[in-house]
Image 1 (cartoon, helix red, strand yellow):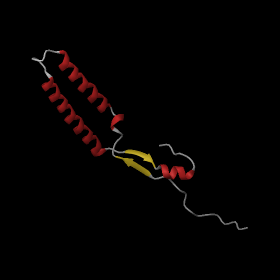
Image 2 (cartoon, one colour; image 1 turned 30 degrees about the vertical axis):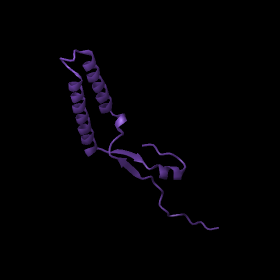
Image 3 (cartoon, one colour; image 1 turned 180 degrees about the vertical axis):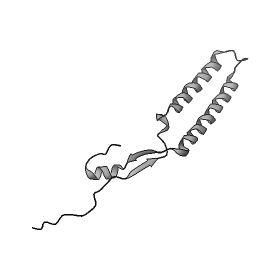
Image 4 (tube, one colour; image 1 turned 90 degrees about the vertical axis):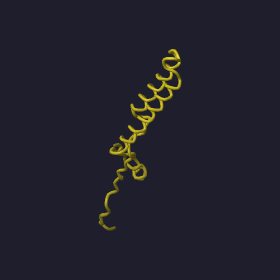
Length: 97
């Protein structure tokens, strides 16, 4: 038998990133949904001559535009890092971040 030791490099996991975390994990989405529902409920409760459905849907549209702009700004400069699962599965264990 030979006393030869392997000089192969150790296998390490790749570091991968997505643009941002998923939108359903953000407080932006929760705030958007709550405020949009509140605007629609307010239009249903008050007198239509003061604040009707047309105004309510206009404000919901403005909220939607604001939400989309805020998500675009969030995606423009941040990353969400994680380890490559294929390499972790190859090693027989899952790597934690």
